[in-house]
Amino acid sequence: MTSTETLPRAVGAGGRNAGAVLDVVIPVFNEEVDLGPCVRRLHAHLRESFPYPFRITVADNASTDATPEVAGALAAELAGVEVVRLAEKGRGRALKQAWSASDAPVLAYMDVDLSTDLNALLPLVAPLLSGHSDVSIGSRLARGSRVVRGPKREFISRSYNRILRTALSASFSDAQCGFKAIRKDVAEQLLPLVEDTGWFFDTELLVLAQRAGLRIHEVPVDWIDDPDSRVDIVATAVADLKGIARLGRALVTGKVPVAALRSRLGRAPLVEGVPAGLLPQLLRFGGIGVLSTVAFLLLYALLRPEFGAQAANFVALLTTAVANTALNRRLTFAIRGSDGAVRHQVQGLLLFALGLALNSAALIALNWTAPGHSHAAELAVLLLANAVTTLLRFVLMRVWVFREAG
Image 1 (cartoon, rainbow, N blue to C red):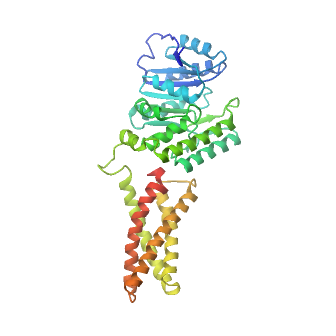
Image 2: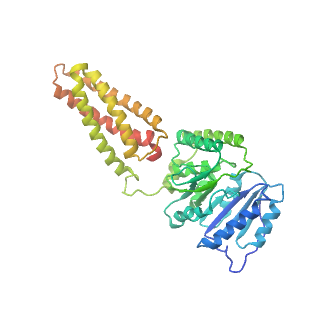
Image 3: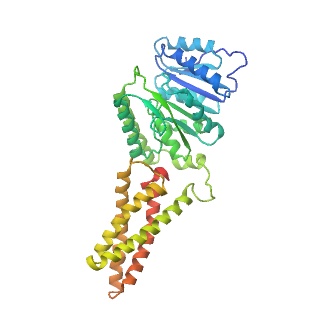
């Protein structure tokens, strides 16, 4: 027996699963009790509300109970149900195998407990069917979602996604919700690069999609925690942290061909030669830069007589740098909420140090070359130094501080 085996299935009148547009994969391991009700409920929902041909694929990864027999009975009973059996465990392995073998243009998966309300399924896949988006995820953390779960799981989920934003600059809100979809052509490019075969599979796929410049659509979901879930939280958390470290190293060392992926899969710029989002960001950044420069010059002029050139430069630059980072975070790069705000300000202060060094060097050079210079000449030199600093700030904000929104 090979590592995968497609079991026979019966197709009812009308051949509902022939030429399926959507293939919903349900990865299972020892789910003999829940599998039947889950598949029947999903099948009824798709039959009644989904307007395109569909397929449901049960991906059984090495179950040792009666799950294979239950799955086979469902395939014989319901048109459009298939079963794939793997000889090795691993949810990621099951999804990768089932999605790779599918011929449907849109691939999805959901957990067997159906914790996510099925009414979110059509909104999940519609942007992929239309070509508007490349990957779609259900989010329990997006605005509009409704979630019922214990404080322990809530804390772990939010902490994990915060770690992802910090360590891997993830811009998606919920990496772990078992309710996702992807276009087949995109999956063909990304799946060979995903190494994880377990629970980190989702996160790795999403990070690769984001780095490739793909559009990730998020759907707020109604979600009720399954109290009988057998997921080992501690073991899964440890495996996820190891996965984050491995993927981070791969991205830093260039093992993941991000540039090649972006060139193949990334969306074309709206303006030829200009990366998507760059033009409006430049305009907003420029406006904020003008306001910051005016504020800097006014503060400097007020403080200069009392504190001297270098001290006035330091205070004025520090004050405007903090305000500049906050305004650019919200207006230029459209980042809301408190997540990452402290980190962004710390990085902004490092940019402030760069600006301070350039401005101080400009003042020292002016004093050295023209000891008896006027205040007007001093302001002109600082204006030029600020222009250079502003350009460097934009580049570094886009590629470093706020790269998740760039």
